[in-house]
Length: 111
Image (cartoon, rainbow, N blue to C red):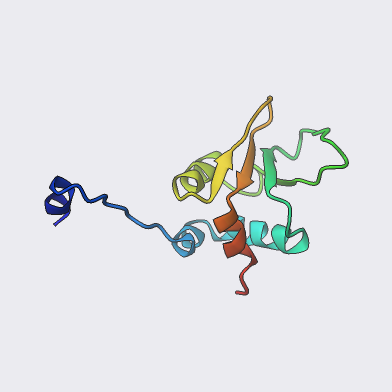
């Protein structure tokens, strides 16, 4: 059926749900949900080790997630990018990301 539709010029779009994403990495998504519930307009976050220090702009709130708390954190974030949940916005030596608005809205939904 896909080939039939593709030959006729129809775009084949496979929808991935954030619920499935949450099933793959429940502790990370739960932490993100908790963070955004306390600061619903923050979208940006960094990833780092608890052993490192980060001197960001004190006037700009961001979230942080730690390698020690989530095994394979970088790999999980790649999957989140593939799902359209986050985008990478790194501009220095610190890995930096932002929640997409669709994912932020999902995180803010009542459980």
